[in-house]
Image (cartoon, rainbow, N blue to C red):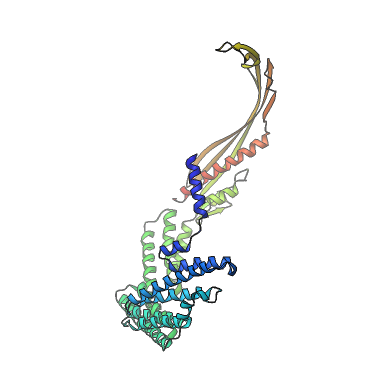
Length: 463
């Protein structure tokens, strides 16, 4: 118990702990430390902004500013990424500390770092970073364009916009050529799928500049060749399987391959006689099922659990491959009444008696007596047995039966003899009618029937 309480107290104290500016600073999260302190100052308002808080803010901003300035001094001019990160942190500081009621406290920082000048400096870093990259391939030109764009988002420095447009254009030109050459290579290797993708990529990347050579035409041509390859492979597989097919599921497999040929070639029209052959073998793979049992309340279950794309239900037994019949019998019995007697003995309080304790002093103790009584249990019960018969004939044979039993009973308990006062005659349970028991049995019957129908459906799939 003490452990549980201790854990709860620790959890409560942890949940209630508010992160401080000092903690963030010690972890090297300098911007967060400023944010935590200024948020605290703003929550308490101008009236509670005293000299101590002002000095604390001044000291913190000084330390963080000097930290970033020292990092800048120690960072090579060519380490653009690190220098950009530092200037962006100074910009974030500026955004946090300007136009606040406490801004005058940190004038030394706000006056030193102008917002526009910081954005211009960051843009210059991106500008120089991009200029330092030699364009040799699409990746290098893309990197140059991205850096110019990031700088332009900060400040329109010198000719950064023009350089961005030139780098982006060069990227699209070089990338289109790379994709185009790659497409040619794949086409020579008869890898038509990759060739089509490469030509399509060439067209897409160059799209802002117009059409790139005959990339659109080659993308379509190679995709058509790939689709032809796939369609022909599926067609040949279907032809091969059809030579030995004799069962319904084998005919359906042949149809699947012909359909695959149809589907893969669909963007370019019909593929040979694949559609007609697919339809022919699909029909040969159909299993016709007849169901006309009485009573016929299982029709929905039959259609749901037996039904499939290759199952065709027919209204005529003469046309059917499979004949399914389901019937059931109801046996209801009133089991009558039975009576049982049980004699019991129970110790009950009688009276207090005085007895001496070890010191000879008289004390009162409870004394008990035996009470013998009889419990008469009268049981009236009934039972319903629901027997379901499933019979399948034709191409496939299946004969099964299963039973579901439901019972109900009402019990009366009658006490006689020297009965303890806490006992009273009572009854429990209820004797249900035939219809009530039948409704209960029906639920279990349907669950079991559905399971059996799934088994039959699985067997039919292998005909």
